[in-house]
Length: 104
Image 1 (tube, one colour):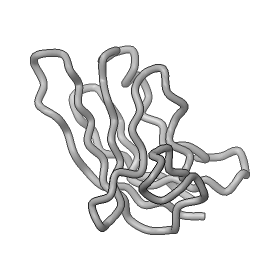
Image 2 (cartoon, rainbow, N blue to C red):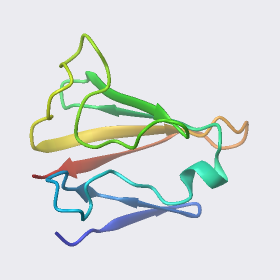
Image 3 (tube, rainbow, N blue to C red):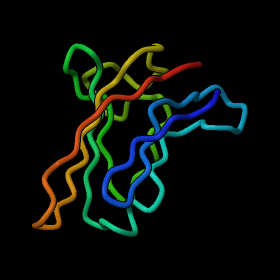
């Protein structure tokens, strides 16, 4: 899978990832997010608006599984479009939102 990136500030945000265990693009990685914004919180929602992942600099990266108990369990999430919000928590930048495609 060839990745396309959005460019925000000094971050490159992939538009897709493929958590299929092949060792390539298995997690949703935003390089330097934790370095530039150490207090960030990332939220990922499914198309129905359910929170499926919430993480920060010390959390494991989003790997296509929900880490929110009570929403969808902890199994593999289905292929499709998901929506993210980056809360930078730096007192300067407003939250950034976008979409990403989960492919298997």
